[in-house]
Amino acid sequence: MALTFHADPDLDQVVADPAILAIAGVYADLAVPKDLEVEFAFLSKEEMRALNRESRAIDEPTDVLSFPTYASLEEALLQPVPSILLGSVCICPEKAEAYGETIAELTQHALLHLCGFDHETDLAAWDAKEGEILALLAASGTVIRGRAEIAASST
Image 1 (cartoon, rainbow, N blue to C red):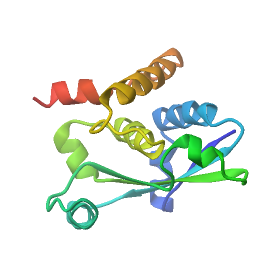
Image 2 (tube, rainbow, N blue to C red; image 1 turned 30 degrees about the vertical axis):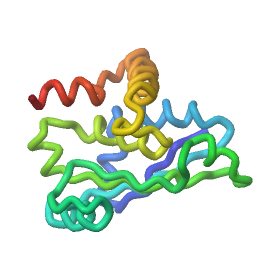
Image 3 (cartoon, one colour; image 1 turned 90 degrees about the vertical axis):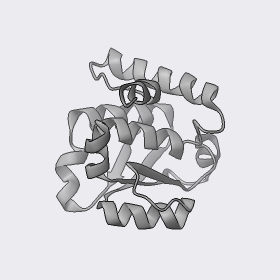
């Protein structure tokens, strides 16, 4: 099965990055037998600030926001359709750069949220699933940092 990112044509090069493709492959393998779809967008700092204020009541820009369609991947897979829209991912490249994060790291982080994981409410489950995914990526030659490594490098 596949995970497809739907993005503006100007982001075609971003979603074709080898690290993003490797991430998509790992998530597609998790979702057998359904295809997964994700809306993907880059936002300016001003756009991200407005969206963060509207969705989370935090009046500042952030690096990434995720808007899941379902509460969990398991719930999504119960839908009687061959292809599932997991949700939307919005990334602010300017904030990512300021935090020293890659688009691949933020994409992987956002996909975990779209699959129902939340590091603010269940860190143990998040870390376990993220560790599994990062290990699968590393085994395929794609090494990216997870939540803990990114947090440690920003302090």
